[in-house]
Amino acid sequence: MRGAFKIGKIAGIEIGVHYSWIFAFILFAWIFASGTFPAVIKNQTQTVYWICGIIMALGIFISVLLHELCHSLVAIRKGMKVSSIVFFIFGGVSNIESEPKTAGVEFLMAGAGPLSSFVLAAIFLGLASLFASPDNIVTPVFAVLSYLSYTNLLLGIFNIVPGFPLDGGRVLRSIIWGATKNLRTATLVAGNIGRIFGWALILFGISQIFNIQLFGITPNILNGVWSILIGWFLSSAADSSMREQSLQEHIAGVKVKDVMDKSPQCISPAASIESVVNESFMRQGLKALPVCNETGLLGIVTIADVKKVPQEEWDNTTVQAVMTRIPLDSVSEEDDLSAALKIMGEKGLNQIPVMSQGKMIGLLSRADIIRYLQTQQQLGIKNKPKPNTDISGRPV
Image (cartoon, rainbow, N blue to C red; front, side):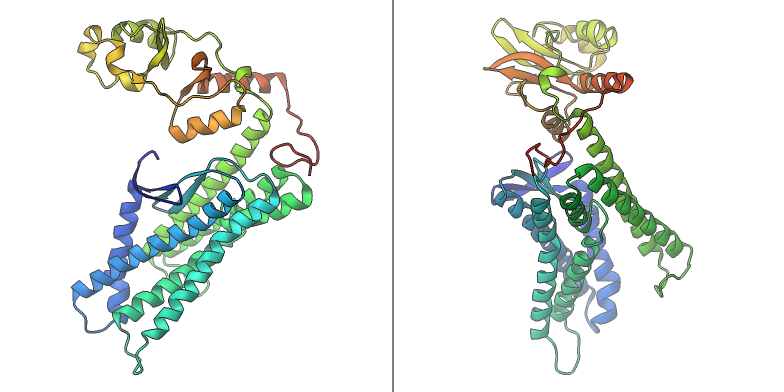
């Protein structure tokens, strides 16, 4: 979980919070404490408003957590592994280590999130009714529960918008996928709708900033900025999803052994950083080197490792002192290239050792993958997926 810290584990799933979410938490607490609750809860101290604001922000966090957990639990039930759920400024993301194998599985996974939000909205509304005052006085408890109900309702509605990668977009993709048996077509349609929805939010945000009233909504600068940020995120995510689908098509059926460097250069643990920088990083353009001795792989040294040492100390510092030691994340030569690339992306790795029976037999780097794709494009080679198959290649 890069850029995030772990706060616990639920059903074997690590729960992490990205540092950007702290800003969102403070922002939500401030908005409710300084504007929303003082307007609806009368004759209370600023302390009460801030307590309500903090509880509201925590309630939103728990609601989004339950939303993502529903996605994850369905995925686990369908045989997929979920490594973590990470919260960041725009919400939460379930890190599911494989794509749904069929349209039906994606439909169930995607639909579980919005359904949970609507259920929570009903629960909070029911609880709020228990604390309703007979003389229509809005109490702090009633206000918090009512706004949590309203927030979950908005979360559910927002997520059923049929634009990828929102849940509604994934439901739409699953329906098109099931009807056409073509994941690429389904992704392009859902992704383009997601892109259009993102740009619509950006244009709406601009109208809010420039005091232009649309759809009867009173212009508000803060709402405008927030709409632009969410719109930009959705549009970028849709573009990224379509690029990823295109990449998956190009590497479908390709194994790690087809792309890896089968004779990677190894460096001795006693070598100096100075020699590695001059002879390998600068002269050969390498970004990382395996560190080996007669017993095998000891670790890996990267440019990031070297940068931790002041340049004047490079000549007197050995590779062994700065290398990342075993055990390292690794792949097998028979692994699909797409699976290896996913591991590298999640772990933030530029290269990964290829192991067999405890021995390193190659090294796979992003540069190797890029060269493979460039050569494939130059030669006009196209992978031809079998017709009427699901994402795993099985007949449907």
